[in-house]
Image (cartoon, rainbow, N blue to C red; front, side, top):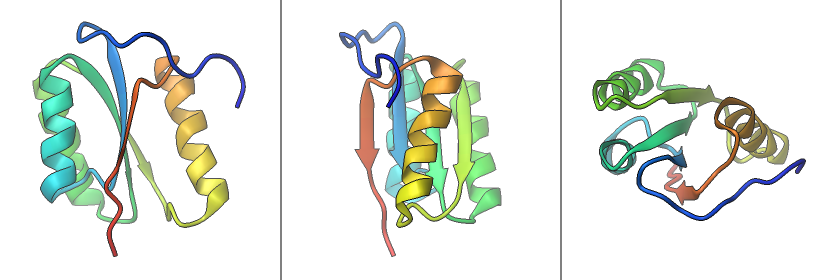
Length: 101
């Protein structure tokens, strides 16, 4: 990884990566972090409509949402999720691993 990925956590400007955050528990976690002030990257397999719904909820909480579709079981994609999140938000404070099958 390039650069600084983490910094002291602050509810005012936090960044969260939520794996499988498009629906269910993942959606609830993404929304809870957004309501506490976090921008949220949502990694999901292929549930595009569900992910778009989660993005709308995060944005309704006045936070940014980054959608990153793909198969998180592939190491290259897992690295790409982190790289895209850092590129979009500058750092990562919290990683929520909620992957299911």
